Length: 388
Image (cartoon, rainbow, N blue to C red; front, side, top):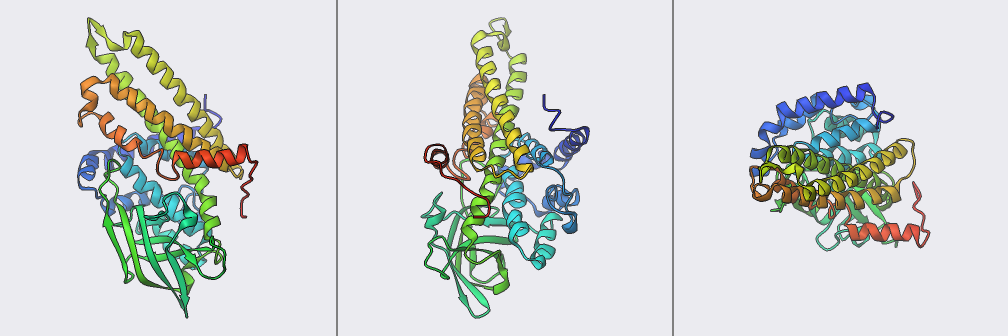
């Protein structure tokens, strides 16, 4: 059905990446979930294989491949059943690194982007704040120019890779105009004096380090401002489309994995003299859920194809995340139910998956925020334009 998206080369990439994950990641996931720590050497292994450079130019060590290689990468990361590990990988590669590539100077790209693609450096993106949440415009973190330096003060929260990353991409308000949306994108090294982080204890995504970060008179060189002064808010809004599509793809992939696992379980579990995949109530529930996953998956692929063509998919990416995360939650709820008591046991994958999936409708813009964005576009006829 999807041959027009995936070539033989794509499928070879999928097979190779699945084998890599089975060897280098899956055997260690339970330990990383327990400790909340992902060793730095796994980033290096990803980098050595080129897995952080899928969408980046060869000049910086990337492979400059089409977006469906990224789709495969995201889908396979979900099948190892650790939302936290997957998030650590894609938050590095497509949150922090996106800003390096899109707004960073050539010097920054040569050092930080190339180092991130190789896996020698790990980054995080710092947007959300304790009092702001999804309201980026309510940001309180500030960057004030003093001579040849910027001085950053404030705090960020819910930051994936916020404890163990080597650098931080920080969005902060600037005092250059009276515009409350005048923000900048700043690159801050972890070892800068005044940067401190504390790990947050989470319901799910437990393998990843999620942090609250404080900036106390953090001084950085003037050339660590990336992009145009005051344009940070617009850069963030532009990149949200990719982030939300990524979360939509993550959602359909984990839902598909949940269905595959549950159907296998149902084919082996017997009750009242037959396997439970022969009970109509269970069969029809799975038929309904599989249909819903197929619909959002097809939509997500089409949005990805449009993004590849340069279409500014703000509305569609919001719809992708909104509906895909909703479907994933409902699918995983029913799949856990079909496993009965075993679904509630940690040794079976649905327990962790149900916790991890719950972040889908929250992170990267809550479902409530996405509904309002979509409503503005379809009811108020608001237009979001690239580069404005």
